[in-house]
Amino acid sequence: MQIESFHDLVKLLEREQVPHRVDEALQFVEIPTRSRPLEGSLAIVWDRNDNLVQFIHLLPFDLPAERLGAVAEAIARANHVLALPGFGIDHTKQRAYYRIVLPRGKDGSLDATLVGPTITSVVETTRDFFLPLQQIALHGAPPGDIVERARLGRANQH
Image (cartoon, rainbow, N blue to C red; front, side, top):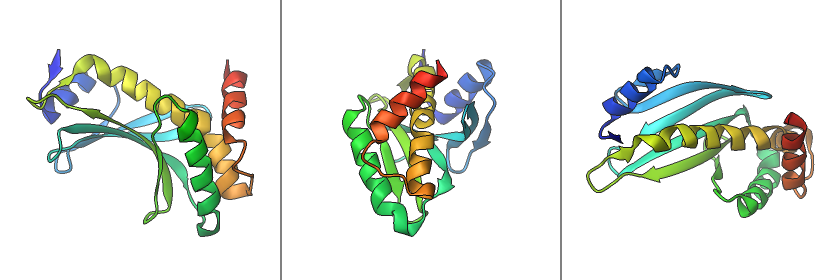
């Protein structure tokens, strides 16, 4: 099944009974997320100008200015090892996020079977790196071992 419009995306989420909030004007959907220890929300943005759909999860803490360099290093290290790198920093809002962007077809549509796995991937990756990034940003932990700490945290969840 193809999702041919923002409205089709909303219908898919409703059909799948995914809790969400819709912003028609900005063409985005916000989905609450709870994957311990991460709690927050994922935004799905149906980009009108580019033929893209963005799946974005903000990390639920602000980045202190004095820790931006350490967080940027940690994000670069994380992105290097991830098969699907997507961590970034919004310097204006001083927030870190994880984002996967899917291209839509020439006709503007997206394969509906990609939505669920993409949501899962974004939430799980954000969850795995949440505590290590929080420790670096808010508690002065060194950025060099972020990948090992994320792997250890993931192993302890299973």
